[in-house]
Image (cartoon, rainbow over all chains, first blue to last red; front, side, top):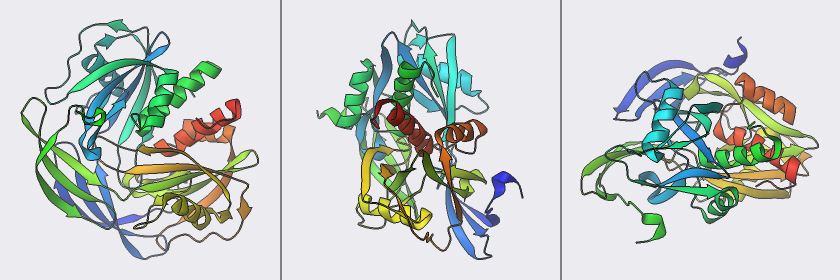
Length: 185
Length: 185
């Protein structure tokens, strides 16, 4: 048995429930390791990128309304992959669209699944430095506001709940580790 | 306008698409700040807890199969909130169910949304110390294996892709910061 197939759940039947603009939903009927049957509710997502944009001693963040939470949130720039798009290219695209900044100095920090219990969404997280300011150009249904914040402000925003999503809290941890150790991981 | 309602998207209509055992799905038709209409695909989730269980210089992790990813993954112990359950109680319950360990020394590290673009899932992340070993007792459709790993092993698992979910990578960062600064955030 392959290392990554331990406790494998074999698909007996897969029902497509919904196919939307961004996500789709399926229910898989599976056979468990003990032979019993169970169902798994699975959201399929195209994948996304996020960028930690560092400018001197600050990080560039964007505030936007998050309908699932019914509130606005401060997050690092991020967005979905277009069909067939390379993550690195998507990261540079989202950075300039949302903040106006461009750079040639961008590195992968990590790629992670956001909710492996019910979704296949993966986020490729990059750090961008040596930023050069240009013109922001968000999508037509995207309303957001940029801000440059210090590490202390970021930690304050976490305490206040203005920053409260996994990728941005992870970015703040990675940034703090970068300050302490010179490395992002 | 409230601080947390900037760029608010007003619901015009909400369609329930699916109601499952764990998640449900709705499509909200919204009015954007510029007056245009758009749709938002939203997954509703009951919320979850996760625990960073520290035992001497090691962290207790569990390996399980993640159907949405079609592979097994090493993660910190975690699970959904039962209806009306307090997060702290759920964290202690999941810890003992999945690892057998009990403790009175447990603290909230942070609460975060995993995928604010399409889901309302929140994870309450705790750190548990002074662990006392007992009997594990996973749910009947849950197959998992416990392991105690060092920080260096955790970092190696991240490089190998055996650890690749947001909450566990965040846990490893938080643990590393705890070592360096004596604080989890």
